[in-house]
Length: 222
Image (tube, rainbow, N blue to C red; front, side, top):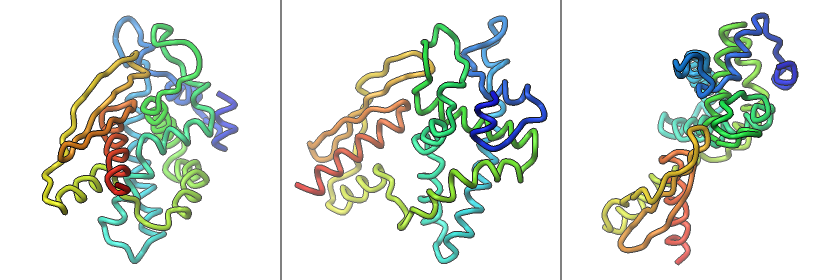
């Protein structure tokens, strides 16, 4: 726990909050799944994260409309983005999960993203919003500064490409799902006018985005 505190630059007054933030819901007590896990802190941290990032974007891009800010926001708080930050601060090594969920470091982006939100919720509960912002700022300020243009969501971009050519809406199909609860793997196929591509991810929506990006890249260069 001390390594996490050093990594985020915040020392908890109540160490129990940090311990709970590092405990996955698979490690339950007496069969009551999630009672000792970080789910409630994740719920809280998600709201703290949303407000802090929205406020930072509003200050950084005063000339943009809500739609453009929304696209930036969605990219910054997406599971891959939060998972990357979780890896940077060492959460993959610090998380406690059930032995049945698998040994070693946690690698699932969805779990890592949830854990980061739980950690943020714990910081907020322990030290307030200013403390949470101080943890967030060094991670998000460089990412915000590097965003030259609002990013395009692959699914939206593919839909716009197809509709612009009167090809109808893309259709998505789940090909498979496998893996333990803390590390699921989904594979999804997308089709537009007979053209298909597949993508994988730790959540169905992530796999859909990967598939959309793969198909759009192929269609735009063909």
